[in-house]
Image (tube, rainbow, N blue to C red; front, side, top):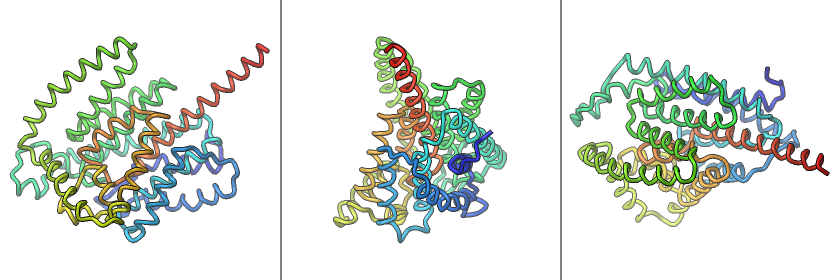
Length: 377
């Protein structure tokens, strides 16, 4: 049972609701109501409670949060602003109260989050596959790709690319938790999440999943095996890249990425000093480019500027170095093809839980080490 400590309850609410999206039914999904309500209570909790942690990753997230409000306030009604601000708020709070949570509590919270998300994503995927439909864009461009029939009728998101992204993040989050708790339920969770990625029919997510699983396998091996497998992997990936390039050569989705880069370069050349450093504003890339960027780093650079991009990349690099690489690498690979907004709860919240778990285990290990040293003395 969960303790009725306020921080436990708020963390629990923030984690289990990361997939409460129903964009095809209402523009204002339940996750927004929940997070906005929790935000005010969480703020009071942090002010009143002295036991607050300040970690480098949390401070970077805080700076990005402050920059967002200082430079993008006029776009606060956009989905991009709402998602990123609420996601950063959740990350900051969960990391700030880490001292009030032990590893068992974090595990229980994570387990609930995973299985509630799997149930919701499964319902969405079953509905989408059972109700195929082709968007007007693909009809007009005569793109002969049958799998697009099963990508668009998502209840939760604009299309199944977002479903794939959530499933991808949660899949590698489970792998991260398995290093500390090898639960039987986690094996089933990975199987479900693997299936959700595959049946999203998102090519970028499937490729990222394969690369991530391969990397995790390589990292488990000894140094010589790592070296051999890594070189074999590089050779195979090089060969596959030529195959995929030929396969995608006439693919509109693939070719659009080069078009976006070209448009972005020309737009940035015309940008003012302020626009370069603080962005043109959230959602302006769609209006100015005439096409969804789907490239996370280009979106950050154009809409939020060099400052925000620097903070975001600093967060990614620091987190990967200090806490976890296996979650971030596949996500950053898939962000070269698509990404939902510039940040969402289902991206930041699992990262916060993983970091809390790692910190919790380090504290326990240090305490054990200190007790051993004292006993020897």
